[in-house]
Image (cartoon, rainbow, N blue to C red):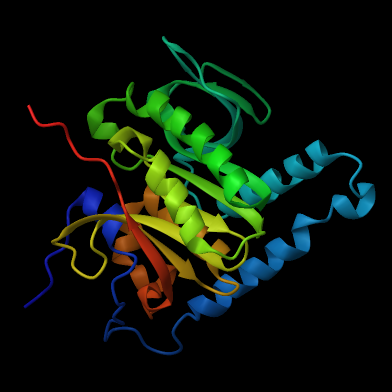
Length: 283
């Protein structure tokens, strides 16, 4: 019997961990996704310190802006023209967000203001928010999560409900100082304590990836609501980039899963899990 496909929201949150099957129609050599992911990591590693090689540690702001630009360049290669990327602010009738490192927005919506890479948009235009760090540890991660959650609340409370299911909030760090995944999971559990305070996925250096699963990755018909951490040597940036693409284009990615993710499920590389602690109030 053919597997029943989950709904749109379930497709976004639940399909990446399922085993991949290669269609019998595929002929010739299959795309080597793990090698491609590793090549992305190698390219990021080569580019991340390009500016620092000129200025050493004399101007960290410029170095940080360069790293944000590197990540945006990688994302632009694959994201459709229906979205664009910039840095800037989300403006609401209740106030303005903190500055956002990478702001992905819908190009079909009007923009309040734009000058080069700087944009000011309304909540309904937001597709995703990424906090970028040169290096991370649990303390820096905690502060970054607080910033993201503040922006998530601002966006999700003021967007039409039918346009919030695929919006994502995430962290990308080029380096990871602490190889203790559970400490990062605990931060997510403690801070993401309501549906409009969720953080969806994180890349911590070359090897560590964290993702929130609303639906059990092993059983798409079962509600799950947990974060998983994974050890994916030299592949975490590739998983991050393709999760961004899946969040923006879930239908296309799900219909071509074997081209976007390795055939082997990353669940075999899981290093930890922790549940979403929020429970709805009873009347």
